[in-house]
Structure formats: structure tokens, C-alpha cells
Length: 78
Image (cartoon, rainbow, N blue to C red; front, side, top):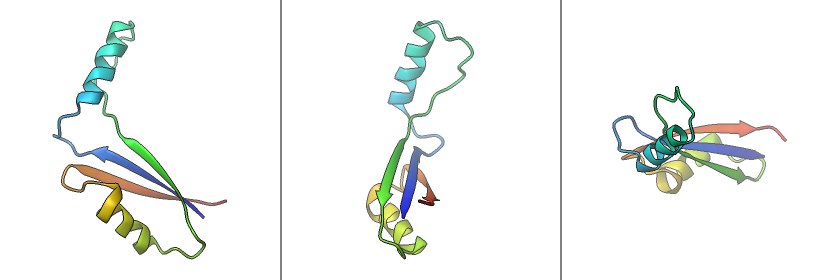
């Protein structure tokens, strides 16, 4: 069983990496990009039967800083 965890900064949290990417895209001539927010993707290979509650606990306790980040869990079928 595989799970993908998408971690993104909450709205209103400064995203310097996103600003740098936005500036770079503008510098490369890609007009029309209004904003860039950078996040991270974490893939987990899990034992069959791992509960959604356990995956959520992993996110809350380690994988995401819930003070400044949101996360979304996507379970992937093999």
C-alpha cells in the first residue's frame, strides 16, 4: 500500500521559495504566472492494513508542521 502526502504552507504564511520560483519564471520570460506556492510530496510505502488514522497521526506528529502547513493524504492503489 502506498500513500502520498501533499504538504503545503497555509494561506498567509510567507513562502520565500515560492517567491524565488515566481521571480525566476518571470525572469525567464514566462508571463502570466500570478503566484507560486511551493510544497512537498512525501510518498510512504506502508504495510497492508495501515489505517487512515495512523497515516493521519504520522502527518500530525512528524510529516507536517500543522501550525504553518496543511496536508492532504492520497492513498494509492498498487
